Length: 112
Length: 113
Image (cartoon, rainbow over all chains, first blue to last red; front, side, top):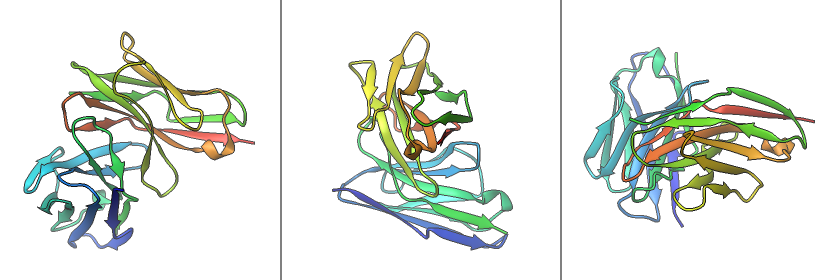
């Protein structure tokens, strides 16, 4: 069966520090991969998605970036965090074109 | 571009009462529709989905939703809620043939004893 792992689960970082959140999917090949951010009362905001290695689509201009160095690995990064980057970050994967997503457990980032 | 509106941010309801969580979407093409549930500090889990066929879809724990194309709605209902249904519920839409799934702002369901 397919599984998705996301880490770290919790992160507290100072303003201006770098960020790296990692996500790995097991049990499938060539998945579509996604990063969402959840802020209180604002639902889930799609940040990035990828349909293949090295292919990244950005949905929202910001100081975050994403990379897909391997088929089942998706990384969210920042060179310098802002206070507004605080939130709950969710990685997800899907197959094909149905749009049905399978989510990781999330990473809670607090920027101080 | 598609969008999703969840009309209620919070819905308090007593245990064993019926509940309806409302969802409207906007899209210029045909869509797939979803309801996800999120328990505190966890990721989202798929509750039910409409891809094609019957417009009434059901989950294993008693929820149902009906796709209404003319009203562009996909409301979630349950005839009798339990304390354990307390969670946040998200409606989502994906354009057929597309890769992006867009979510509503969520509705927090609070079931009281």
